[in-house]
Length: 215
Image 1 (cartoon, rainbow, N blue to C red):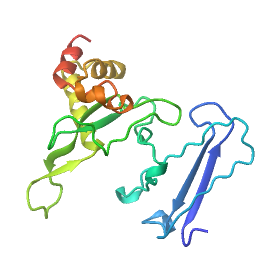
Image 2 (cartoon, rainbow, N blue to C red; image 1 turned 90 degrees about the vertical axis):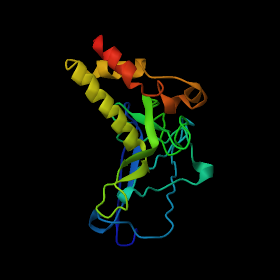
Image 3 (cartoon, one colour; image 1 turned 90 degrees about the horizontal axis):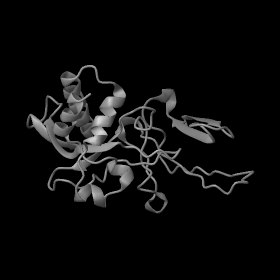
Image 4 (cartoon, rainbow, N blue to C red; image 1 turned 45 degrees about the vertical axis):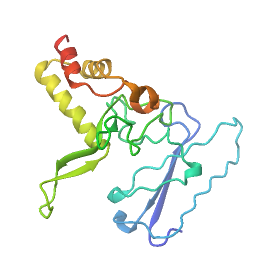
């Protein structure tokens, strides 16, 4: 039992494709609102018939209110932290890197692949830690505040794509994607970082616009 909450388990075992052998477990609060009951939650998986010897990988999706469950350090794999929606088909997935106090290093809070079927998003990285942006609150002490996260990195790439489409409205999704990756900047940071996190490199808006003009 899960206190006053409920649980859902669904799976698609023994099939080929992206949903192959997936088991999804959800813990839900009453009426699916708020947090589940406090306490220690233990999930044990018992294989009744394990013939292939293949490992079992587990991902934790983000929780409500931006508070997500976490693995203990001994059980965590920093190279397998990518989650939805970055794992969706056709998405331009973006990781983030630091701009303050030092410009360049990969952001420790940024997820990276591969995903559960071996695809290795993100495609490129953009500034995402620490970004000075407008403070979205009417009680903020100042109109601007530092923030971080891949949402900010994605905003940089979204702005770049808007400029590309302004310069060349006829660009297709694949052309936009190709220009972003082909024009991405590499440097000592990207060379030292995990390939699955940096993707093609750092967003270079000027170079992306030059590429867009040729499409």
